[in-house]
Length: 151
Image (cartoon, rainbow, N blue to C red; front, side, top):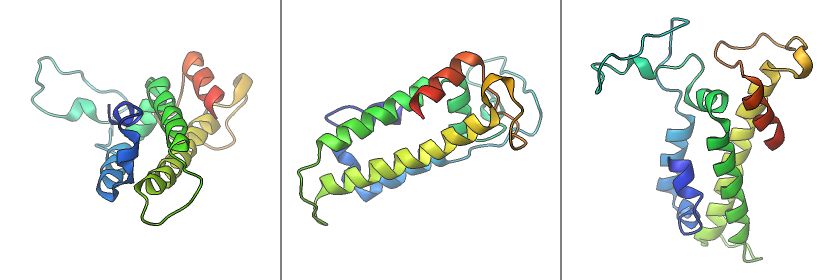
């Protein structure tokens, strides 16, 4: 939700604020509750009595990239486009637009690292992975295609 919020033209410039940058980083890169078991039981009622059903085997961002990659990648790519549009052609340490541009690019590169990890765990054409993938990084073909297009 936050990525989609900041991928709006009227909101991306707000990422010039160090506090908002820290909040988005904390939300995006927070690993969340770890899922010890291979499978988990879905809650039987809403609201759920515990947050155990929200646990992931590899972290929240990895979970989003494997389950709904377009939600992350489209928003991040849009944020990069919008941040580039903020460029006035002159760098200034006092400019919040410059701060927003640099932050968005750093965040996009960090997300790209997560994407590359997921792609490394899912090599093309059924070839074996070059490294033993972490549990929870396996993709279906549709999600794999979406991630490959944006990497």
